[in-house]
Image 1 (cartoon, rainbow, N blue to C red):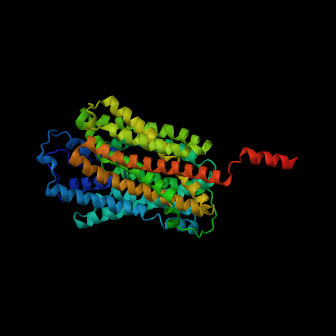
Image 2 (image 1 turned 60 degrees about the horizontal axis):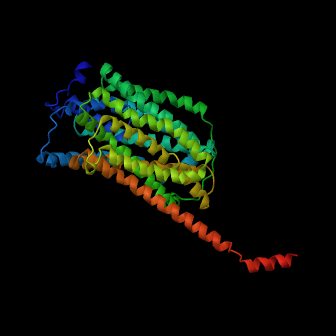
Length: 461
């Protein structure tokens, strides 16, 4: 075990293409790209940490992409694309299947598939090297994407069905466990990797998921549903829903951008030991998980504030990404305390934008004549998952390219443009919608002048 953990330790000695070190690095690269912000990132980051200890001075020539770097980017982009398309491609038809086979079955089956393939990923180093190994890596991660999407789509539908009047509060409260997973992931994954090697973290995590399958089979109620005639495309082509999808996409892209770039920037800029990098990530994770329940409660109690929560959250997110570097145009020296403070604000602003989106899409669907029921909930949850996965693909891909060409400071500022665009677009839409409604109500109820009012009073007497 110990020899395996140290096979690729030397940054100046690349692993042999046929050896275990190559396969471990390829496997962990797949894990990082396909499972952002997961337990896997805790120990896969060991490879990048060691490489990042090399000299920092990069000349102008090194900023240009070599042919080898270009091929590497194309290869990793194909991994991102293939894994995320497995997530997003399910949106149009999974909700219809949800009503046929049941949300509970899809939830449990998705968990079972995800648990099994997670275990399989941990033993992929046993597969013979070469095309067979790479092919199995793609196949296993694609199956994991399908299982995870099935479970998440079904879980959103079940939550919305069980808590029709408090969906934002419930979803916000559950984000506490999302933050808890992000907090516990790095120390748990790092401990398992250092103590037992590459396979154990995957096997442990997969077994935990499999143990939860029979538990959820007993606990979850079964919801009956009737197939609906409403289509996925009818929902997504509504102008308001399109803008809300842009909001989901922008938030996911901003989060995805941080996965491959932020740890490298922290190590290079602040000279922190590798073990302390995870503590910096806590600023974002804790602020998001702790503020989400309060934002969800506010969204449910005061529904008219949802739109402005999304608008202000998107604009604050854009400002924070502009300050994360900060952008060179500001001529502000980056400080560690300021970096952590901006991450805390990003976590809070992401919650402001993300939590109200689901109930707002549901409200828009009801306004446009969609039938209430599990079928519609499946459509909305499938749409949410598809847009989030699309952003999770674009964020690391575009962000990694910009980080390579322009540096983290400019890359984060440009990445914040997604949030700025969505905030301005949805804000203009809501303002125009409010103006249109006020003008239509004034036309339906024209003002009555004093002469007409006197005439009406005289006729009444």
